[in-house]
Structures are given as C-alpha cells and as structure tokens.
Length: 209
Image (tube, rainbow, N blue to C red; front, side, top):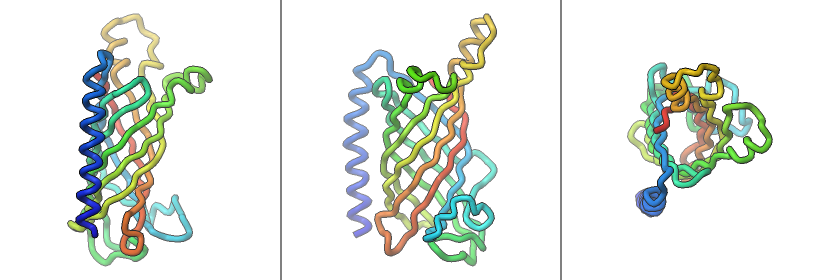
C-alpha cells in the first residue's frame, strides 16, 4: 500500500511539474526564487495540539537545513520544490511516543504557492509583506522509513526593497533581489493509523532572479 502511494505521489508531481514548467517557459516575465534557511519540525501526534511545547516536541538543527526552489508561473502562482533535513534527539515526543534514541529526518516536498500580493497592494497592509498560501505533497523519511504526506500552510515574504531609501542604483538592485520567508506547513500523513502528523516552521533568506 505504501509503495503504491509513493508511486502515485511521484506520478502526480511529475504531471504538475511538466504542466507548470511548460506554462512557465511560455511567459517572458518568469522569475526564479532560491531559498536557504532553517526548519523546525513538531512531530508530536497528540490530541492536545500543543503547538508551542518546544522542549518536548520541537526538533531543529542550527545549520542551513531547508533548501527551496520556486518557479514563477503567473503573477500570483509559484511552483515550489523543497528539501529539508532535521534531527530528532532522544527524549523528544515523536509519533505520540518519547523516543529512546536519536533519529534522522529528511523530506522532499512539491507544491504550489499562491502569492496574495494583489490583496496586499490593494489594502496596503505592510510595505514589503507578501502573504502566501500553499498546497502540495511530500515524502518524509525518518530513520529511512518513508511516509507520504499531504502538505498545506501559509506564510509571508518580506522584501528588503521596501526599506530602500538610497538613490544608488546598485543598492536598489540588491535590495530588490533579496528578502525573507516565514512559513508554517502542516504535513498530514497518508497512514494515520501508523504515523503521526507534522508541523514544519521555516525561516530563510530568499533570492529572486
């Protein structure tokens, strides 16, 4: 059953990747976004939904552990491919149980991000802030055991160009190309009776070209 679901997810991913890549190539104003940052995984699988129990449930590493590539396919839509690494220390709450040994974590995720920049521009909420919502699929490996997931979340970009008060053209260009991303993803396991659900928080530096 698990192998079938993995094959199904990859088939869906390849279909959407091909479709949106063709669409992206047909647009002259396409842009690429590259992100490097940190991720925090909450793999608690509890009924209490204690999202801020960082001591028992949050897992992170303090080196670059989240890498993402986005391809712009329309004014508001981006194709998103990401890879993340993490580490579960013994004593953490994972899949509903306190683990007695360290575990390695990695995930490959595919999805779509919808930028709500038109809403932001109309309302003028905060200069430089572009809120986003996302949806997709992924494969997570914990101690080499694969689990397919359904991913959905929200976040926002903050572009440094909004801070620009200098007339220097080089400075303007650099500010226009860099920003920050803050996002939170829920990852729902396809095997609810076996594996728990996850929440992943991401903070990173974004470069657009």
